Picture 1 (cartoon, each protein chain N blue to C red):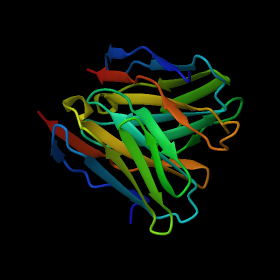
Picture 2 (cartoon, rainbow over the protein chains, first blue to last red):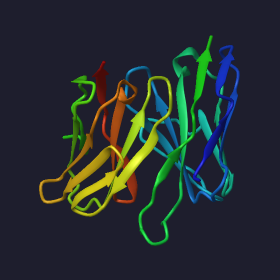
Picture 3 (tube, chains in turn brown, cyan):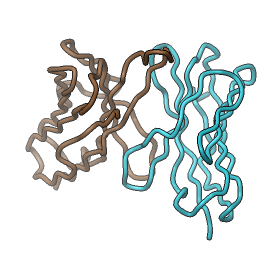
Picture 4 (cartoon, chains in turn blue, orange):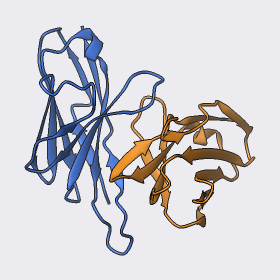
Length: 120
Length: 109
């Protein structure tokens, strides 16, 4: 259980285009979804946290007009990189939270497989 | 001081040995602790979580938590070359999951 998918897994695009990445929780409803970015040989960097039906909360230094997040349902969140530039090339990973787990009282995050973006 | 600290490594152990990965955290109110494994070029996968002081075992993996000393560790018994990866410690505090920088483990045949 607790499978998270991402689509696409690879994107190569020209500078100036917009790229949309989808994140889906396949077998559970995710109260919260998270978007991370990871540059080569660096640790995960949280970009934003999104709750279904409300505006995303962005981390300091992340431009919300550049990285548009839509969390339309309990199983789908999208990240759109608008007017992508070469410096946006990175590994984008979403995760979905199961919320409080019955009997455990603790939240667990499950990660999608990631989307590798290359902007030429 | 970072909220969650890990030695970046690489930690090199021979095949069959016990690998010990450590993590310290600064928020004394943290309640939940997670270990993720990340292979190169892949996204993290959850190995196990722990929220009570003491040890929790799952197969070859044992998580150890000491809230008084604010550290959590992961032991991998009978290490295999396939265990070579970066191990991320994550801590839930203030309703946020905060990741350490990860420790790179290399298991040599």
